[in-house]
Length: 169
Length: 374
Image (cartoon, rainbow over all chains, first blue to last red; front, side, top):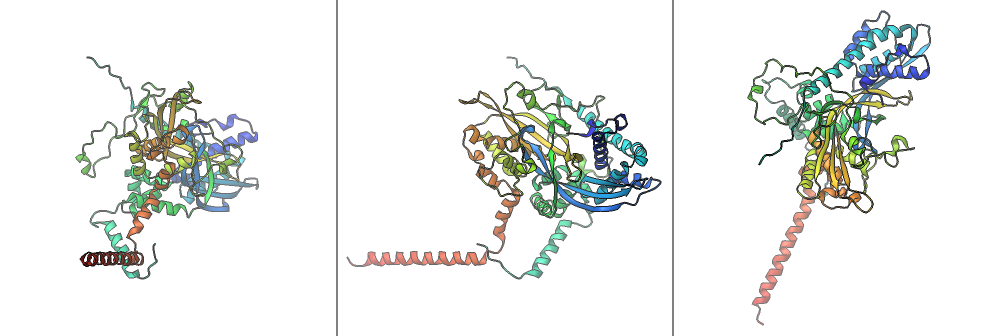
């Protein structure tokens, strides 16, 4: 399972095999899902040529059932659901080829799912990829890593040493 | 029996308007925003998400506002809303060993790897009312201190450490885990509850069960109805990543993070003919920061394992516990009693009158019989 701070490997350092493509895409999709929607809006506004996406699946709200394991490692069970939004778009690459982008994001913000899908499509375009990686995904991952560091630093400040008292008679 | 009634539409409309006005309270006081509830009533929001069985802080906050602060009513609203949404996927199991930990304590090992991390807690507060909070509009509290060295994100679970020695029973992926995919795991939102329920359904029912009910049952096991001597092996709270494998992609993607609270309760078990003495486990896991609930859940989960471990008390009766643990069902059935039962009651009233008449006649006959010359 891939979680937050563990998947920050530099995508440029890996070759172009399809497995690498999947892991790179997982990394940016996670960053887009975790991003505040306002940052994605700003990033889109900041683009020189904003693409006109074609809706393949209009943004919709649904749930996903979250599973867990008994005792953390045992049999699976259903913990409860969470709200999720999804969207699929088609964006034309610089060379005219069709790129399909998917957005799956927690919560009921359809616009978030739509923006995530548009960026997912654009990031698959070799002509756009590096700039988006540098200007959008990189800063998003950095902000998220920084947030995590602060959570762990605050938690660390509450670490205690309990002493077991020996009772004297 | 409940017989439908008609009429009263105007009165009902007016009653709902009266509710809306009462809920709003004094209009000289500013309207409470959903964001304020989400941010400043976080534990109420967490409870509504856990028992409403839908992780969505904004929705839970809105439900609390609409419910006039009545949490079971808010839970009902969330449950009802949930049924209107299509289910798009089932997640991969969340991995609590890779939690972004905000709090993590053990009552059994003081020197556990990673340490005792208190995090945001009421523990060790004096429970004195803080009148300073009544002074509104002041500056926000200073940021909580941060250590120079953050926690190591890899924080092993205690149960996994003890498990390595064989002192604690292992939790391994169960039967039905292989081959059937997500559908192999029973889901009580899709199938009715039947008994014996099995651990997966039990944990699902407890995770969405009423905190008050589970707390009382857990308490009963501590007071002797169930003969257990539990220890908190570990409590941890923080965020876990949620990952799904969308059909149209075919590989796992993270869609976000949810806060969960996990409690691993350990109990001594003297052993049996087939199992050596070891510690057994009860498991609690809730959506959101619900520590009391997670602890109660772990105690009740352990109590319900009596079938496997051979004991008997109310908290160990699976059908009794699971049939009554749901706050929406319990609240609905208790509260339906206030709806019109006029026809039903009329029938009972007639019956009681007839019985009294019959008794009076019998007594009259008996008196006449005793007065009659023998």
